[in-house]
Image (tube, rainbow, N blue to C red):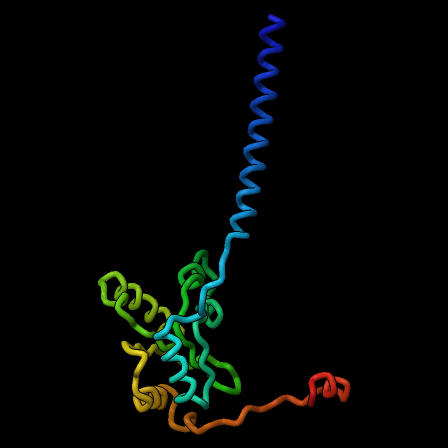
Length: 185
């Protein structure tokens, strides 16, 4: 009986040690997975970059931000469980903001070949509905070579003609002469 009891204790100790070793291996694996990240070659693909350059030239009176998480400019109107999850992991191709206030004006999406499927169209419609519920219109372009006049027409249609005039940026003045020297002013 004593031998059986000792055998039981030995098996129990081995099982506990094996469990500890396995959990440490799991912890090491999760730490090394974080180290296996790699930088993408570019923030945007070729077509998005081409459209971005056109937007920046055409919309000088506004800020254009690429690849913006919807959670950066949307919030739940009412707190409810899981409401934020509907948009927290979604991104827009371009967010056009008012230059002085950074208020979101509208979203521009570049719809490439991947947007033609029924599933993709449903996802796009869901995203458009979310943005519409927040009062943010969406413009969808199917080509990065969109004409400047179309970009400006859409901008005027959404924002109004007064916003098209080029706005000079307002540079804040340093609070002290030490800051002016440090900042090179």
